[in-house]
Amino acid sequence: MNIIVQKFGGTSVATPEARGQVIQKILKAKKEGKSPVVVVSAMGRVPSPYATDTLLQFVKDEAGEIKDREYDLLLSCGEIISAVTIATMLQAAGYDAVALTGGQSGIITDGVHKSADLLYGKSDALVGYVEKDIIPVVAGFQGMTVEGEITTLGRGGSDTTAAMLGGLVGAESIEIYTDVDGIMTADPRVSECASIIPAITYNEIFQMADSGAKVIHPRAVEYAMRANIPLIIKNTFSDEPGTAIVQSVKKSYPSQTVKLITGVAHRLNRIQFKITEKLDADCDLLECMAKEHISIDLINIFPEYNVFTIDGEDKNKLEAILKKDGYEYTMVEDCCKVTVIGERMTGVPGVMSRIMKALNKEGIQVLQTADSLTTIGCLIRSEQVSRAVTALLLEFNI
Ligand code: ADP
Ligand code: ASP
Ligand code: MG
Image 1 (cartoon, helix red, strand yellow):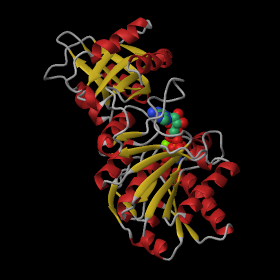
Image 2 (tube, rainbow, N blue to C red):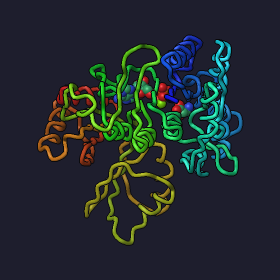
Image 3 (cartoon, helix red, strand yellow):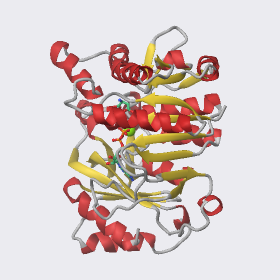
C-alpha cells in the first residue's frame, strides 16, 4: 500500500498559508503513488487561539488548576481542531479525507494522564480508510484508554503519534514536517553557527532529543527505531531534502563525513541544589523526591555534601520537602545543561578537556558535569547558553 506517515507540527498548521503548504505536501505524496496517513499538531504557539498553551491558560485563568484527566481532555481539543480543518481542506480540494481522534485512529493507551504510553494499537480503521483511498488525518498527541478516557502522550507528543501509527500500519517511512530544514548540529535559535545534518543515527538523535533538542520527541525516535522505519525530518516551507534518521549512517550514507561529535543540545530551566549534609543509609530525601515524582537530572554524592540538579518546575515541591525535613541547602537558579553528543567519542581521550578549554576560553563557568558513553553534559548559567553552544560547535568543527 506504500503508506507514509506525514506529521505536521504546530507552526506548519498555524496560518492559512502554512496550511496551504501542508495540503501541497500531502497531495505531492499522493501524486507520487504513496498513501499518506496524516498527523497534525495544535495550531501555532501562544497567543494563537487554539494553541495548546493558549487552551491551558484560558481554563487556568477562568477556573484555576486543572486536574490531570481534564487537562488531557482539554488539550486533545487543539489537535482535533487541526485535524478537522486539514481534512475539510482536503475534501474541499476534491479528495476523500477523514478526521480522526487518536483513539479512533487505533492508539489505545494506559491511563497515565499527561504522559500516557501505548498499551496496544489497532490498525484496522486506518488500513480500512487507506484501502478505500480515503486520507486519514489524525489528531496527534493523544490516545484513548480501554475505558474510553482521553489521554495525552506528553508535550511534543504528536511526533510520538506519528511514530506509533507508522509502526502500526507498517509505513515505509515517517516524515516529520516542521519549521527548520532538518536536524541541525544545535538549535538554530540559540546559535547561528548550527548547520544541517544530512543523516544521523537513531541512537544519536535519541540522545540529542533526550538532552533537550526539541526538533523531535525522544519517544518518537524509540518507536521508529523499534519498528525499523526510517524517520525523515523536513521543512513544510521548503523543498530541502531534510535529515534522514537511520540505523547506520556509514551504511546508508557512505559519503557523509563522519565526525567525532555530532551535535550539541541544551535544556533550560535547571536548578542546582547543594545539600550540606550526608545522604547516608537512613536518609530518605531521595526516596521522598521519588514519591513526589521529582526527577534528578545531574547528581554527585560526596562524603561531606551533595549536589543535584532538577527541573525548575519541581522547585516548590523540592523546597517543601527540604524545609519540612530541616535540610540546610543552597541553590543556583536559572541554569542550563549543555550536552555534547557523539557516538564516536566512546573511549576517545581528551573530549572533556576540549569541552572545558572551549568553555573556559569564553569565561563560562561549569557548575556540574555528567557523562555517558556517548554524551557529556555541562551545567552552566542560562544567560551563557548561546556563547557556550557556539564555542562547542566551533571547537568540534560541526
Ligand atoms: P513542531 O511544532 O513542528 O513540532 P518544534 O518547535 O517542536 O516544532 O520543533 C522545531 C524546533 O526545534 C525548531 O524551530 C528549532 O528551534 C528547535 N530545535 C532544537 N534543537 C534543534 C536541532 N538540533 N535541530 C533543529 N531544530 C532544533
Ligand atoms: N500540541 C502539543 C504540544 O504543544 C503536542 C505537539 O505539538 O506535538 O505539546
Ligand atoms: Mg514538536
